[in-house]
Structure formats: structure tokens, C-alpha cells
Image 1: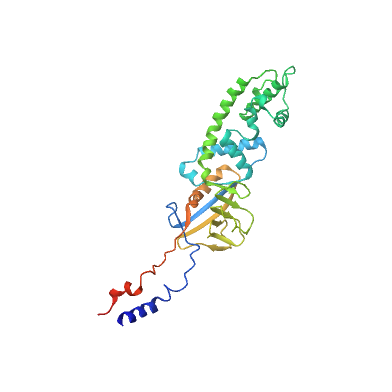
Image 2: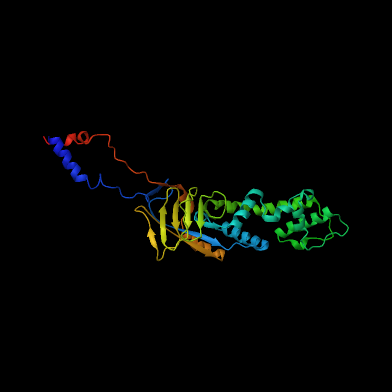
Length: 311
């Protein structure tokens, strides 16, 4: 009888907590040792990527020079927004070492497609008048390669360039590109891709405000433009951060506070300050929902509290 009364008293006392509805745990997350509990800010760097070929070359040179002067910690916190055009060009650099139409300079003349020949023939340069069609194309290929290194003035319109000449020049170009490719690759893990990029990228940015994103089940981390929210929220398959932190509903958890911003950069010299106030987005990719701690109800209350019996 004493046991029954004791158990009844315990059930009454804990009824408001153990047996009441659970507090919503949907926002509770943890990370695989990559981010300790606390407050973090994520700056996403946005460049206006050039459309013109020569402007792209200058952009990549400036980007490479900037990355050369950053230490490992600064590179770690550089989060770069990647547009469709940047994604295409960077993938081309990673796979071939060349940018856009530059690969035309590498091809053997006999292997050129018709549209590639049309492109090369648009170069308004002098070529040997008595040379055959293949030789004229080869000269134009050589001029294209000279253009890459800023040495167009070295082109001789009377000279019959050979495949060997091209090979020697290509070697110099590839050596110059090696540093650029290595530096871009060193920050690739912090790329935040436009959601219009078709590949299955794990960290994306959605510019469309307040878009319904619950269907994006294959995305790990999403930055979404919003008029309503700031901070972050957790969906079943995605961690969603809302850039911009003023005059909005702020969402966080007891363990984490995440803020984020889209920072448009015109001058590469601005990067230093932006990086110093930012954390790395790649660390977010290891997020997972906290597991709920379930009470073990298989053991009877009478057995669990048998030692509490009043003698």
C-alpha cells in the first residue's frame, strides 16, 4: 500500500513535465565537432562577375593576387557567392586549365569544329596571304594564346607558326594558371552557389524572397533572401539561414545564434575587413538534428522507485 501511495504521489508531482506535451525540438541542432555552441556571423561575398573575356582575365588575375596575400585562416573564412557564369568558368579551369574559348588554342587545327573555326576567324589580325586555310587558323590560335599572356605585340603576321610554337607558349600559360587554380581550389569548400545551378550543390543561395523551399530536400545548407526572417531555422533536410538582421523576426536556438549578410564587393582590397568578421560556411555542412532523449518506459515505476519506500 505504501508503494502504491508513493508512486501516485510521484506521478502527480512530475505530471506537468514528464508526461506533458514535449517542447518543440525542431530547431535544436548540433554539429559534428565543427562549431562549438555560441554566436556566429557568415558574410557571403558577392562580386559582379564580368561578361567580357578580357575583363574576366583581369578579374581572375586580381582574385589570384588577392588570394596569394591571404593566410590560411583568412582563406578559411572567405565565403564566395558563385554565379552560373563563374561556375562554368571555374569548372573549366579545374578540368582543363583553360577558360571558355581558350581551349581552342590547344586543339590541333585538324580537330577544330566548324563553329570553332568561325570563332577564330573573327580575330581581325594579319595572316600570311599565301598560306593555306589550316596555317591561317594556326596563326590565329597562336595569337589567341599570346592574348592570354598580354603579349599580342609579339605576334608576327608574316610568320608561319607551328604546333611546336603553340606547345611552348601553352606551357607558359598553364604555368601561370597553376597558381590561380590552386588558390581558387583552396576556397572552393566555402562556395555558396546560386540555386539556378543545376548540379547538386550542398550550400546554395536563393535570391527570390520568401520562396517556399520545403521541397529542396537534397540541399544541406540554404541561404534564403527574406523580408520576414533573420537568423536561421531547421527543416527536415536543410539548415536555412536568412541574410540581413534588421527589422525582421530573429530565429535562433538556446545553443546557437547565426547571423549572415550578403556583402557586395567592388574592390578586392575590401575583402580583408569582410573576412575578419566572418565564419566559414563549410562548417555548417556538418549539421544534424539533435536526437531526442526518450524516457525508458519499459521499466515499471514500482521497480524504479522501490528503494524509496518509507520503512
